[in-house]
Length: 345
Image (cartoon, rainbow, N blue to C red; front, side):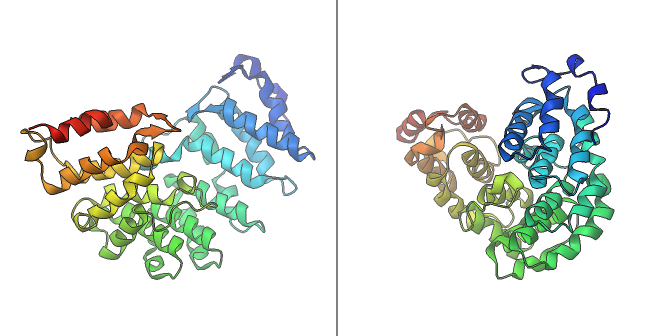
């Protein structure tokens, strides 16, 4: 196993912290019998060959060996290896789901991970639930192989494990398949996933049932579910992102639900929830005439932003990306300035 690992010119490649000479040792450590050694190696690989979502020179060279390790039935922590491979293919998935899906011209590392698609399909039948879930998640990012992957994924929509069904449902939607039956499921996380899938497939033609589920989820009906990989299980934020796909046609009636969510979010969640609310409230340029010239929905959103100090923060500190989001709509770009705006004659 791992023949050829040392034949790669790792010294001529770089990762986030310098020359990639430590990568082969970290890859070998994934086969260690010591769980602490495996965990340390995974952490190091997550931070050096791909760093904060950005690819490095070493990444595509590491992928074939990671796939070889994943294929070995006696490898421990295969779900985590799958997680690493999907991260190498996509970077931060919330950025793709929000702004860049489907892929346009995927990079070298994505192409390298794509070689593992047949293996990912095989792992949908694995005995370990976490491996099946991560395999379904990984398949979602390769639309080039949608036809074959959908044939393997669709039967899992009838599985008993709700986290597997939810993950598979979203993956099916991302690959262009239908999973509408999940909207009638008694399990909230499955209904959420079906609504996400409908938003991806149907866009502005999404059904009222799907839009209602997205609105409820964006308002916090499902919150964070550990075990669903998409957006790290941040289901309400993904619902808010998906609402952008269905447009304003059916969202108007649920706008108040988004407002109720704002005081409870901050950081990346705030970007998603408030971003959708801003798009709905301000479909065109900010009207002149100040606060009093705004409509009821616009004033309601601004009032909620003024009343919600945490929404402007990331880990307790001012969040520049959130400030930039508000500023992009030509609104005052701080809570105090926005409060002054509401009081101006």
